[in-house]
Image (cartoon, rainbow, N blue to C red; front, side):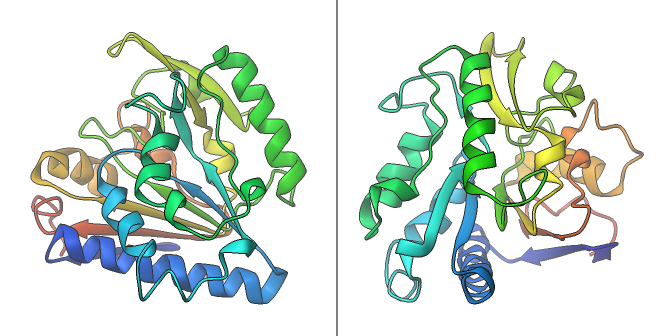
Length: 247
């Protein structure tokens, strides 16, 4: 299934989503490093990407990527310290980054433990410093999707959906009664590549609305992600894709 500048790939299992995600990561890294000498990637939180991270931290992938040339960022963060069980940084560190031969200066986390507005402003400055382009153009952004259609921390009917003048924004999520820090539509859609990793039957209804429904990004924020001059790839397992009409 394809849309303009968009590819949807339906795979037999969650494990295959992880494997193809790792292959796409490797290809994007090779391309960016060949072209510019470095590869910038924004990691996703949630459980689905963790399988891909674990593959990348082991052979054959770990030995095929020059990790000293990879710069790591995050697309969103919970407003908790880095050692908190809910921290997106902490989950990626434990499963992935701690196992890589990485210089310390290559890992750029959002500081969820400070004031959300201050953390968002700080991260905007950090991205401007490390990533070229206006707005900054990240080589690869990895995203998950919630069963409500949210992505990063762009939740339905929240203020950050309209923060298009920002790169990174604080976002209060009423249904969770908590603050998040998130990339905005502006930054997401500037990327060279964006990959959604979506698995599980619980995502099927929202995924159908995102891919085949009427435009309604206030209700299904994942619809906002349409890179202006890049490639968008959905890696789906069969349960997540089960309600799509065109397979």
